[in-house]
Amino acid sequence: MDIFEKVVNNMGPLGQYADYGWGYFYFPKLEGEISNRMLFRGKPVLVWSLNNYLGLANHPEVREADARAAEEYGMAYPMGARMMSGQTAYHEQLERELAAFEKKEAAYLLNYGYMGMVSIIDSLIDRHDVVVYDSDAHACILDGLRMHMGKRFVYPHNNMEKLETSLKRAQKLVDQTGGGILVITEGVYGMAGDLGNLPGILQFKDKYGFRLLVDDAHGFGTMGTTGAGTSEEQKVMDGVDVYFGTFAKAMAGIGGFVATDKPIVKALAFNMRSQIFAKSLPMPMVIGALKRLELLRNKPELKENLWTIVRALQSGLREKGFNLGRTQSPVTPVFLQGGLGEAAQIVVDLRENYGIFCSMVIYPVVPKGVIMLRLIPTAVHTLEDVKYTIDSFSNVREKLDAGKYSDGTFPTVADKY
Ligand SMILES: Cc1ncc(COP(=O)(O)O)c(C=O)c1O
Image (cartoon, rainbow, N blue to C red; front, top):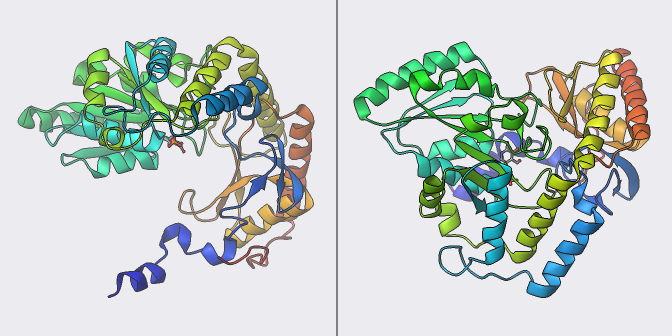
């Protein structure tokens, strides 16, 4: 079998729809300033699909800091990986500030959150260790685990009873191998918006002596009194051994960080292959992140604005009888009943006739017959945006109930690749 032929014949779970959705459901282009209103295929839309939680993407101070750093240093500096020639005082300063913010001894930057998480897992554990992780874990956690040569146990999402069963099994194994146990959860689960049950997990810590790694990509900057994340929200910052955050969401940047004990940061810096063998974050990213972190810490009104929109949107939708599942964070899933064709038609109707751009999530992420429309509120949305969206969603649901989208045909709005 020719490799090319095989790849083309099996495009994978997402790629199988490539010809129905190019440029529309997949790889759509949102143009204009990053904001609540942008252009999609030349038409203005109200955007609910960007993780620009605090509205920092276009904050004037952020834009100025990014531009000045680019002007002063260009995009190339520093050249090389951190360990070889890519270290700067700004990288170190950002790490100190992130560590202090997360109340950890030290932090280390990651040139992409995803790659960083893969290498954190790879560096922390070896074949003698056992990993216990939540079934809804993000792809970067699963990819980190793909490299793990030892055992792993998955527990059903946030099921503390099953977690303990897995811990018991893990304990038996490490008693034989002499290894340790690593538990991995997310802080905010980015699809459904619910929180990892950190206190629930930590109740077992003394008994099983594990270390806890938390991926708080969506919680960093949005949760907790100061925005330090889900562990702050749940008042268990001390219990989290390794805290992971990304700059790609509330910070509206790129890159990420890991914060933990100082000796562990040292060990990670010498072992995370995706960081050792890849280029350091360019200066505008680092200086830009310092500015974003400053605003995140010093302008609580950004988080308050975000939560004003979150509360209005979520309570408004719930009052109209929409099912938002178990969200406890800004992530706002709206669950409807219907097949793939109906889901696609709803998205087209929302975009074309209501000017609302949101993402749709389908099987296998949600069960067959369920449509999930996912809204991401931000600090730059307005209460008018919220009202308009709730009214439009009510309208669309009426049409769905009346069978308006039920012919099941897939809309042909999209281009082919
Ligand atoms: C839970 C979670 N972890 C990790 C990542 C990866 O972060 P980054 O975009 O910085 O690579 C994401 C981003 O989608 C995420 O949602």
